[in-house]
Image (cartoon, rainbow, N blue to C red):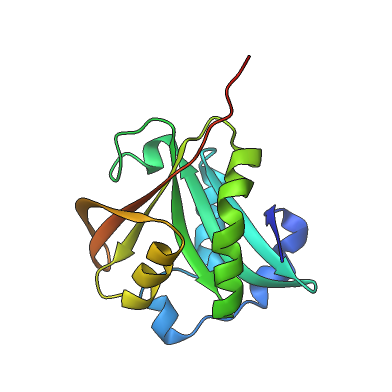
Length: 157
């Protein structure tokens, strides 16, 4: 699986992407997220592609997107993560830190907010090194647990 930034040529992949009702309890379909990414320059739509199919979607939100969840000006927020296949979701989580370091070299932390009722996702994030910050934020679908993953930023010489 490879992670890439959304381009209009990928629209048919998004149209074919299916999420269950259970998934939609906690996240939005990419067709709802992508217009926000187009409207806000600090919000980036990211696709996980395998065999010419969209299998993972998420948005990365810089600056104002992070503010409710972290005071770190060099953090990026992981939003609306979804996958058609849980195993590929794990692959995306493994690749995400390196992708962020390459695409957003000024970022030193990935932040996310997971619904307290979404125990599966919370366990997945913990498995991949995200730590509960102790911060709680009320979201549109209930109370959210804020989690953080620090990144190593290359030293400039």
